[in-house]
Length: 68
View 1: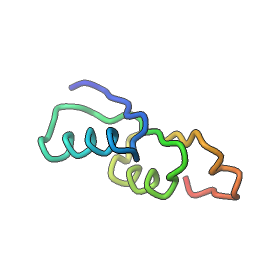
View 2: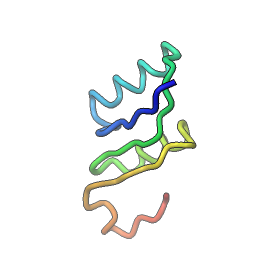
View 3: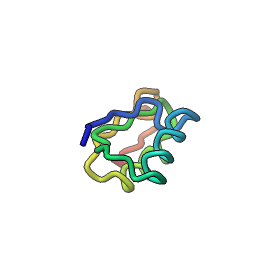
């Protein structure tokens, strides 16, 4: 099993990668997910992949969000 990091997990390419992993039961372990601003979507992905580390790279941290 390969470990993968999905950068831009909430964008079109990231969502396509996640859908492929889930729908085809690919032999990968998602170890990290990142996005720039869609913090709520990233948090939901974190629940779907509980072992994955989450990285929010945009300015969403500045709005008082502490949901991770």
